[in-house]
Length: 419
Image (tube, rainbow, N blue to C red):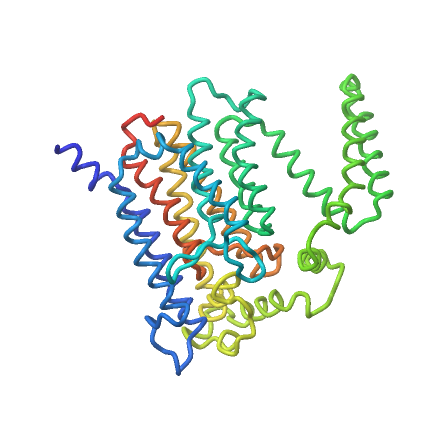
């Protein structure tokens, strides 16, 4: 009995819990600031985003407590069941969901509504962890590699079909967890090459680009003459790369109009203020904060509603305006502290299931952090993903809370074997 009580109290990583609470409170205060007005100064007003967020904070607190009580073996035992159930909801929402902002990927119950795609993140992390924890599984084997990738790609495609490209792209981050388990580094090189070729194909002359690639391939073969036996492989790579370069336009043409506009603006191919209004105003807000900011509730860009979606996608601009460079660095520092803490916790796990899940949590949070802040300062495409624990939205807060507290529970039982 004593050991059971210890596992429910003393073994929890309270530093991680504290960092979570700090971030959630910062988010709540920032949401209040983003929607603040003298006529509506009550932070608990449920007709305003701050009041609605508080309701979700209470809900998430209850969910977090329940997750800390549940035996960690439950998550490993029912990982595939949870994954299948959430996938079923994601498919069903396309037929029976509620349409919000042109996307029918929401479900509504009572006065609440949420996106099942947010829940798919922790469900996929659980399923991936369950699979990779198998005794005979090795991601260096092609069969295991393909199955692991399929676990990630299936929900990704399901969500992409719904038209939510931003949420779908997040699942790519889970691939980072595979590198810790032995996935070959050349996959990272391939991924980076595809991104670079995609960008170059959109801004440069394709025939010139293919010619440059051929020249570089020949130069590499000439410099490394001892590797001439690989000439056919290098030429095959050039052929595939050239084919991909000419296919980029076709893939780009299949994107929605606003998605094309965002990419063109980011790459400097267009300079229409109407198409990048959000980003321009966000950059102005962040820049106007200077070193120390204008002060809490004193952001003029915020108060005059210059930045659309400021309490959700562009909430970082409110922090930059009101707390300046110093406040922004402090916020990023708290996130970095959380990420490093999670990496430390993941590395001390005795269970492979728990370790993989820990790295999945780190990967998802890291991706959201980098892309969301990148959106706010104009160095990343606007794909509409929230800043973890900070942005307004019950679905995202619940999703991140469940994602994190499952790992806190698993870590509390790290001395036990979870498969």
